[in-house]
Image 1 (cartoon, rainbow, N blue to C red):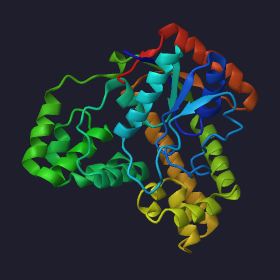
Image 2: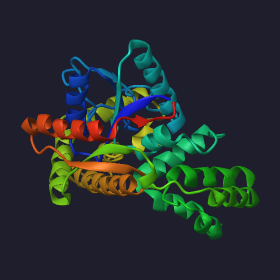
Image 3: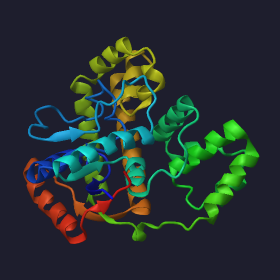
Image 4: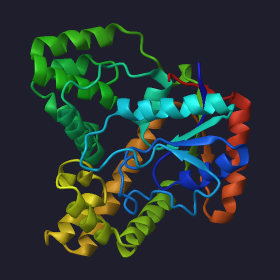
Length: 320
């Protein structure tokens, strides 16, 4: 079974800079576990690492698909498998770094639900989850509340999404049957999982970093990037265009809000995302937390701490 060094954490905690430092030190292939970095042309609003930041790094998991195409956790896992196979052939280690809990869980546990029968529906549900959190998905199961109550892990969006897909495709009886199957399984708790490293920032500090990043995105050309994306990809708005910052930029371009209002809404949605990420990693994974770097100078020190965690617990076994 393949193994990987894993680094997780909420958005804006400095994962990119820290992971880059670690990849340079170890010569590892670095795989992004960020669901927005997979889209081509979406650079500013996703804080995608620049070519300058990636000098000397073998970086994977970004620019996989056009932003008007559906994408799933399974497809990301396929891309990760290819990188792991290449690393094995070259005798290299792998670092996986990112904040998308679905990707990390798929890597550690595998995908427990079948692939999407309706790619368009799954892409829509994934976008709804990214925009509004698990509560939005729960609302879609309001017609069968007993099913949601029976789920052992109702915070797991993969399972909730699968329930919604089955509900729409096969009806109430099928989704009730699947829920009973899940409830009968032994729940895998975070403490039973391999230890992985995570970056943690105090909430007040994270708020300031999120606001700074959002404002820099808009002043750094996000509106122009979105204009170009809408010209190149006719269906951009219905898929990746609902992502944080991109929906707000489109609303500003369409006169639905001012640029300042778009920035403020982006800040609020990013804070909500960070909260969801903290909750996910706390509940779903066995994370050993390290304080995030406050400055570029601190990145090296934080990388040292991450290495200490990895050396103590060893790499995690992954299902690829």
